[in-house]
Length: 186
Image 1 (cartoon, rainbow, N blue to C red):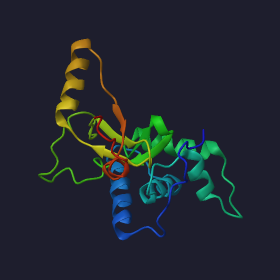
Image 2 (cartoon, helix red, strand yellow):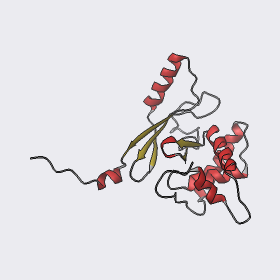
Image 3 (cartoon, one colour):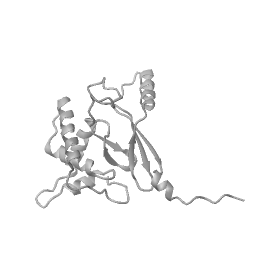
Image 4 (cartoon, rainbow, N blue to C red):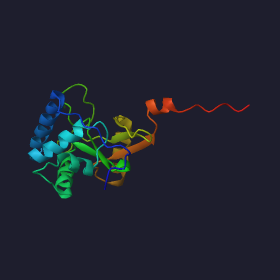
C-alpha cells in the first residue's frame, strides 16, 4: 500500500550525530532483547528517523533503490515488521505510514522515564498520536492516565496487552491558525 499523504516524506541527508546515537541505542535495545539489528534494518530505521513526516513502505523502498540494488517490497516489509516487534517504530494506521517511537529510544535509567518496564524488558506505553488532517503531521504524545485505563480494562478482561495505538485526527496548531474564522451571525 502506498502512503496516502499528498506529499512524499522529506528525508534529511545525511543522518545527524543525534540520529546516529538513536540508531546505536536501537541496536542496543535489540541486543537486550536477544534480537539482531542487521544493516538493512538499521538503514530502514535510519530513514524513518530522518523522515520529516510519516513514511510509507513504498517511500522507503524507493529511497533504498540504487542502480545496483533493486530491493523487493517484502524486504522492506520484513524490516518494518522487525522494527514494529522491537517497539522501535509505530504504524499510523490512518496514514498507512510509519514513525519512530519517541519513547523507546530514551535512556530508561533517567528520571524522565515515568512509564512501566516490567514486561519482557520492553518499554510499553500507549502510542497516542495527534494526526493533522491538513498537513499530515503526526505528534506522539504521552498521557499516563490513558495507558493505565487501557491496562485496567485489559486486566478486567484477562487480556494481555502487547501493543496499543490511539489515533486522534484534527488540526495541528499551525493549520488551525490558518483556518479562516467564521463571522458571527447577527
